[in-house]
Image (spheres, one colour):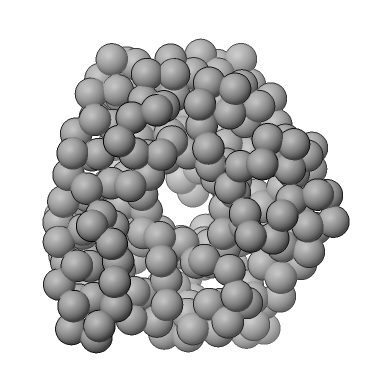
Length: 265
């Protein structure tokens, strides 16, 4: 899953693809590098970020969705708003990626159900603005698993076919470095829920901390390492900024334990 951030303030590439033409060109490049999915978002969810008005989010993402839909990669809309999701699906998106797991806007579940599209439900502690303010859990893996099971049940109760739901433990969304590592270490417990698991460690700050690098240094090697570990533990979708490097690494890793990640990862 290649990341297309149409935002001025995303933590890694904010502002680089705010222009629609630049974002579309970037999406084509990621697809050519091997992305099977393009995840298009118009609202940053980095720690401390504030919400974006629906009209502005639509202005950012709709031209990009319209131009990338129907291409070689499936289009996902990364949003917490039912209005944005509805417009994006009408424009050709076939996946809704909601970091709030239908908590911020419960009507989003009905949009997914009515359109018969796939969705990704992610765990996040609170909201982006406050999620990294001293996050605490009794047992991070058990707590995240229970949350995801509950949100899966809610989605199904709202008419979403269970086969349409993917789950994301939300690495870096209200978690310390130790929480992130424990989730990766015990990812098989999340996989045991029985739905496809999405992992999103790409370029996140905990990788720089673990590697002893300055905050702005290259985090691609750490991203690759965590994705290979996640693949071995059962994850099936890998949300990344750097598609070519991760796709190659996943193919090689899969070959060593006889898993098929397809022609593209």
